[in-house]
Image (cartoon, rainbow, N blue to C red; front, side):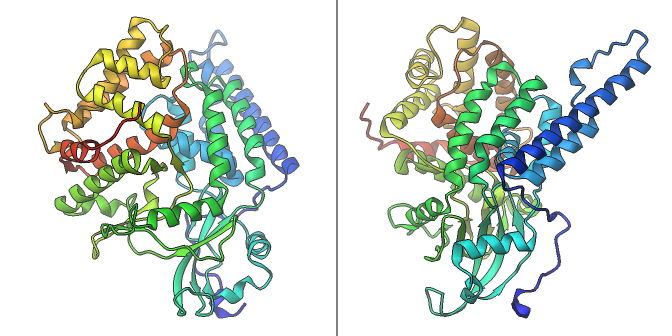
Length: 470
């Protein structure tokens, strides 16, 4: 390959391991995990029996969630990647406090790292996707990735002038999908469901079957890098963000495929970096305001939303004062009918109109109409609390962060969650899984930044001219 294709220093966070790519191979790994968890639970049972006089323990229900078993789960999910890891990341990003603490700990550890493919396996994906002479498209290619996630890994590279759209060398990020990861989705989620169900780890009100069904559909979309490339182009168009200098959307190399996505390299610091919290207050306010504005525009103008709130996918360029958006795999489209009803619900919540909140919640499918008063009150109260930043009576600009009104609001919403999990009769509408992820992520970012935002001005400006069909 030459010196331009040698391996640089490996980040201590990333580890290399073969991705089990066959169905039999993945079944073997999950079977081994189940056996090791069972062994760990048996060991813990014997330990407790020997230390408890009557052979019982108040924590008997947590036999499977020992520290040793938590480490086993984190290690195996990080090695397997795919749907299991994505489900872990999906659940860990939520700030709802609905997961048992032990399970939440597993998913948070999993979110912080995934293994990457060994060199020979990566080479196989690049050859099958770009052809045996794939390397001729680049003047340099770092063979060790700088990032690895649930369905792929990302490499630094430089496009050769002959392959570059500008006819000169261009720095790019090369996203390489793990082999056969799309074919493993159903199998992986089935085994994760079995483990979670057998361990009785989730409350009934989470409706695990619906969660897994939605995740299966979303993951199948995310495994199609050609689909992601199309969304990148749409967001770059003048109709969306192409003419908005506050945002940067990278261009896509036309040689990209379903399993290898090559896009412009963009500079900046990820929103997940600790240094973001140390920015000047004006910058932090601006970042939070732009992200909140983007969320509202995606919903009520584009009806198209990048729904992954993982803030490593958002970069801040302090010199250009620009936010770069770099991952569009989780982009979702919404129908006009759904968005009409969703906006009606949020407007009712902002107006503190409890009857209208219940009506539009029923129209959307949040409620069945058979809920008891306890459930109905908890749901309506949570919606009204969530809309507080946009309420006419709320003083502006609205402060997020510790000690702010938002801290009290989130605490009150969390207090309603156990009630809703107990009395909920139906899972939330499927569209809201992804939509709520992004909105909660936006609020979490504003909180992390201790930002102050004129939320009502954003709300009025973006929703004021909305035309309802329903």
